[in-house]
Image 1 (cartoon, rainbow, N blue to C red):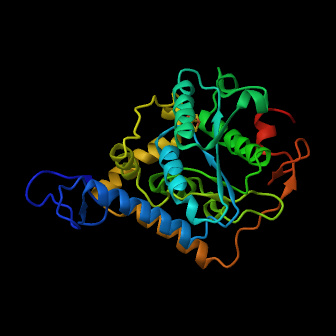
Image 2: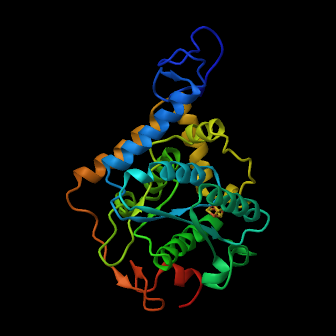
Image 3: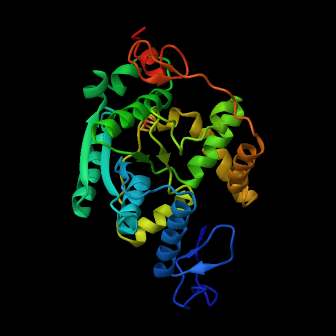
Length: 307
Ligand code: SF4
């Protein structure tokens, strides 16, 4: 996707009004109204084609208050009437990151209230009796790795607490392509092949990622056009993540070789389909907290040194 320039060619390919965007990997330019419609239709088709929502689902939306989760809640809210008796419950996880979370939590509260959606805030302090700032203070650990593990657990706890049948997160196409490359670079085949969309009977709650067909820039454009874009602070730990390096590398590659991110996603899909046997994983109930785990003591208990 690129911003449209000026000139006679800068017209919407569908109605001739001034274009606001040119779609990625395509020569089509769209005006504001047609871009909003196209983005929503693309996400809706992705949900339908992958049967992400079933009648009667109660979907927990991880609402950080940032751009991706804001777009996710807006879109799911507008589709909901198409799915019989499905409900949304938004949950904001406060990791305890000083100077960052306050504003995003406020944005999440305001959005949920504006849309009339049930909303809860849960914190690491409440669940784990500590928070991210305290855990990483003075230690040589990657904050994002710790944060990711604890946040996933927090959402599972919230899903059980609020009776959710699925967890929806705002991962976009850029996030997903970065994850594929990171797993390749780490040689982590099991994670690369993991399918979290169907859950695991009696254990995992299925996770869905409806926005994984939209580029980050498309999400920003969508929010700007709908007047829901807020300039919020960035997490102070973001710069320490390997993801940032991969993100920069992929952005440069996409610029020089358009379609790179899409090819990575396709590679993962093809790999999953061509391997009839998934890498075998054994599941345990963590002997400390009882949660499902790939080892006798789960990552959360190891992180929190409950061993
Ligand atoms: Fe957590 Fe890292 Fe995201 Fe900050 S940037 S909220 S530490 S995952």
